[in-house]
Length: 133
Image (spheres, rainbow, N blue to C red):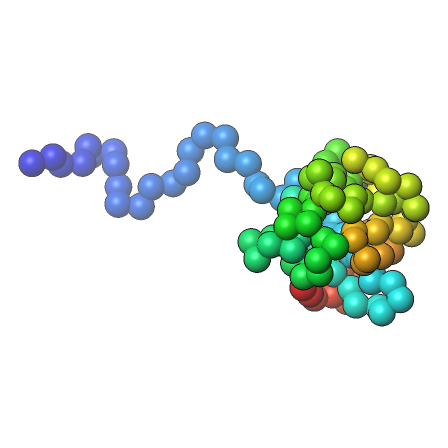
């Protein structure tokens, strides 16, 4: 029979480098659907958008690929990355494979057009928006 060493206890504390999954300086990304006004909130630093049921945000129209694109927060900015979608990702009317996003940019995924709003921590705390799909 094995017995725990005297220095071991039933409740272990984590040791070593453990990275917080949310990067320092992270701000949520708000995507305002044009012209409808529905707002999607991206609250994690890496989110998959697509038609597939496993997507973080599901856009269930035929012109959106199953794995259409990924929104990633890196180096204190948001970027969109096309995942070889059939209908592409357009930023301000130009097809892009990868683009850094700025306040007011327009992003088109299939027939959906969104306006980019970068949340500040104060704005997010006062008026949180809900993630919609």
